[in-house]
Image (spheres, rainbow, N blue to C red):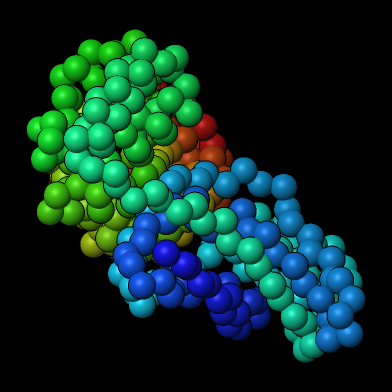
Length: 345
């Protein structure tokens, strides 16, 4: 199995967008894993004269989750990175954590990238796989509550050999995870693609937090999350800097499957009038104890349109920090609710 990848660079709104074209050039099917989103890139730049060019990267902590791709011989896939490049020989670097500043004009710039892809070893027989999976699960259920343990458990559940061992033993895993904090039991919206029929499957039944972060297809992921019957124990939904349509927000607002959802946290989205109308007054509010919409482009008018028709009496935290809210609107917000919600502006 041999994986070949090519870096494609295209102009995008005054910046340069990065995309990788991956092809299995071997004569057998192959599987590889990588970290998504593609932010931790090994990128080198040179000028037309061959001299190295500096690339300045803002300090940032990108949330990364494992993803697997399976390609037949000759099969290919295109992977986009959220990282964009600004060609700027001089001046301060771009403060956006997803924009890297290249100290060279666009003309004559040569870019090379290394993409870290880990090949998945082929199966060695169903009996061996089943024995190893069962042993690995027993080991993980004795492991301490850490991010690493949870990530390893997720991989074990996704790769569980159902044909040999039957369905994932959810009740057994739940009992072992009972002392774990909910915050550790986090999955990402795209994990649902591992389930049968597009559902989150066993992994969703074990999760307590779902995150959609830096996704151009955030609407599709949110739609799947809102409709999945496997996510009825999720207590927190986090959406960060992703493209979400009003239709997806409407699906979330009327979801009947997210029965345990108590916290909705949105950060650095652009909530339009349509988005606000889709969320305002939705049945979802009756279950929430925490609502966050930080740096989401809200002003007094949109805040009133969102909050006034909504049942917020159960909120203990209402976080609207980073928006354009006047003191008058802030005073109005303080009169809303009956539990004296902690208001963050």
